[in-house]
Length: 262
Image (tube, rainbow, N blue to C red):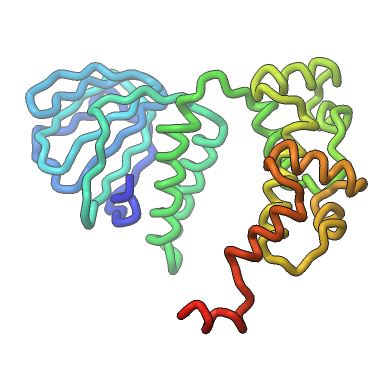
């Protein structure tokens, strides 16, 4: 997927195709990607017939012969050029239509039609997010939208107290069911998930070397420095002080850099 950093969007359309719609046989110059959102279509790619329906991604590599017909479908079609590298995708890939994917497609459509300055950069970034949703997030059929929203809330508010009852109220769920659902989907409790996010943030702060352990504990939402230290050691394998000391050894002060030949 490194080649996705070297692509240029050339065409986009979000449309409802009637039975009269067809693509005459032709050789694709750019790469083409069609997301069938509703309905079905018949594609013929390099002489191979493909029947696709909603929830199918159709990828046509540059240089391929393509033709298509439909009895009716709603689709989003993207054409793009790869400046270097290749994109390894099968012709047909199933995907899950998530709320996030729908939002990204709408955002791409808005940016594409606006033609504002910086549109190409913005659309390229959105297209990469769409691909990620299609190939990774979208394939996780076991994902739950309540849990995904709770995770996002925790990541954005980990410095604050995280309570099951507050999350349940936000999601309109029973608190007991809310906690059980989160544990079922994530394999850990809400409290443990929040602590893991806090400890990741604490690691970054300790690496900076400008804050005390007590300050880092407070900045990451731990009201008790002893609880913070115990949690840090359990998840990181070392105490916060040991982690900070090791980080200082890896990142010497600027005035010492000349001694290391930098």
